[in-house]
Length: 240
Image (cartoon, rainbow, N blue to C red; front, side):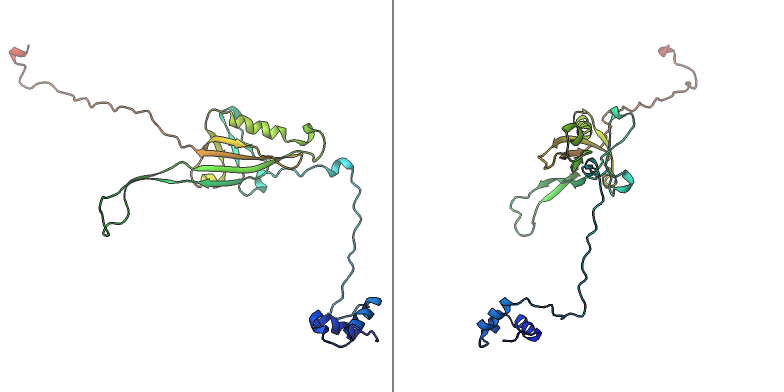
């Protein structure tokens, strides 16, 4: 059997099940296995070989340095913390975290006994908004990918976050997503540091609630003082 480009193209287009019905298919298959099939120009374009450029010569230390933290202007929703011990300075989370906000409506419901089909549901007497539950999820990255723990682990950021957890007061926050809901202060409930793969990475999860200031000191209003003028006609003798 003469192996031509037309025969090879016909065999590749028909498929295995259709070609099995052709006489002497086994002989054709054996013949194809003995030859190196030349390239057939089927499509109107030709593939160009890819050129792989040689890598630049970097020092071994430079190759393990991590990316720098993004500044506040390069983040979409930057989040910053500040407490009374920070002397007015904000602490910006170096890598933009994920912020999840959730809240509920507190209702006082009353149900009418034997309401029947005419009254469906309950009577809502009062309702108020519950606190906003805020979940902040992110990660800290060290300066180097490999090395000693002092060089790789993000120790300074972890200590800063620990200080906010131990602060017995509401923490002031600055974030556009929170300020839309008038949230300027939060109270941290818990912080979770899960296992994170990598010597230089440490994930964290902060669970907090919103804190709105209330003026709970009741100021009693002064009673009005009635100014009484002089008695016209003099004073009666019995009142002297």
